[in-house]
Length: 217
Image 1 (cartoon, rainbow, N blue to C red):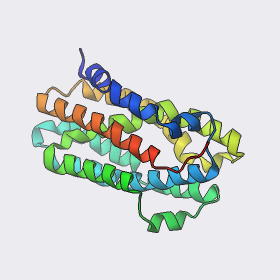
Image 2 (cartoon, one colour):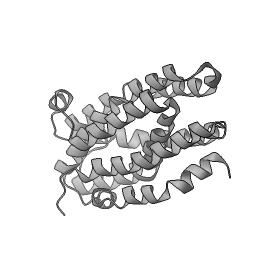
Image 3 (spheres, one colour):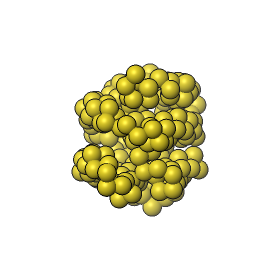
Image 4 (cartoon, one colour):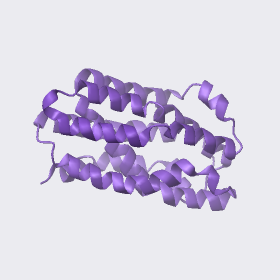
């Protein structure tokens, strides 16, 4: 079995836990309030703003014999820079206060998710970050475009309130193809174990972020 296929198979239970989150299920049906959407965007900002820092930390900690992984992280850095500002624009366009979110604090669940990522990358194994990338991008591929369209219809919000959602739904399809090819190059057993462990944990922690968002049907 290719490593990517193993990664998908061994994290299936945790992925199902995330996708069973009521806020996700109802969001895909357009059954969340504008306030809940704004709360989701706020938490998205508070983890996405760490993306480039995490990618840079992982790249700097990789040993010289893993230049292929470092080069991939450089590509991710170039692609992901500035995306947190898209989220703030979406918040403002959807009737929220982007600057208040910028200067505010995340919910505990988001703080714990980010802290876990830094600890795993900085203390355990820098390659573990690819487990987080797998979770965020595979989730985005499944949810972003569909969720944005459902919410645009139900909340009667224009397209400029969903730039982050819509862009990532498209971008991450290509990213996942790139990611799958990259994982075929990961031969180190310790790296493979770290990536799988990070992915399993991150599905649970990311589910916690969604579950922390106020939601009344």
